[in-house]
Image 1 (cartoon, rainbow, N blue to C red):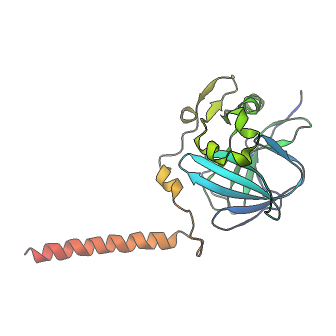
Image 2: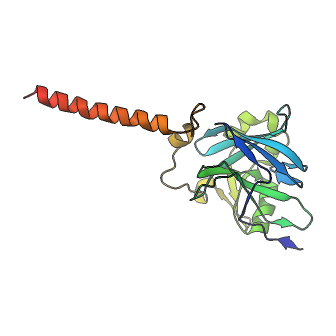
Image 3: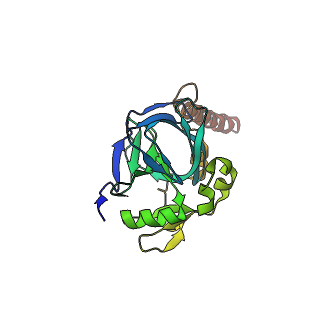
Length: 222
């Protein structure tokens, strides 16, 4: 059985364009690719981060005109030390002749991306092929993920190891200390400005106000 060594490979998404604070990204694949529970034919798609709460992300994939959704795919946070200026999609190793399996998606400028969670049966196969742990979800949730968005948010996610051992997510995928549920829940960019600077400025003003208030109170006690 011949393998193509794509494990851990990071490549810019073919013909990708990113826009909007929902991380809307237009991606054109020149050949079919595998997503959790389905295969996408070659063509143009729109990726959107529909929900990112704590350690559970939901990514929706639409057609080019955004009038048809192919699926809502669960993901967990994936960390990259140095953000890239362009969209990055990583692929796993594949069997010869099979489509590449999409491993993770990073929005331009973000350190945290989305690592996709595969149905358990497929996750076991990918873990063996890549010799790396793969996050998994119950097989039945992948049948029609468009109708299971609420269930995906509560699904018991696990990790499949190359040894066929199943363990808890927290035992394998541990985010850096700076990452927290509160950080994930906050929007990463302002819809109007596309930058977190207004929020940083607000914190600065509040800090200055607190210092002035302390000084005034101290002066008043003399």
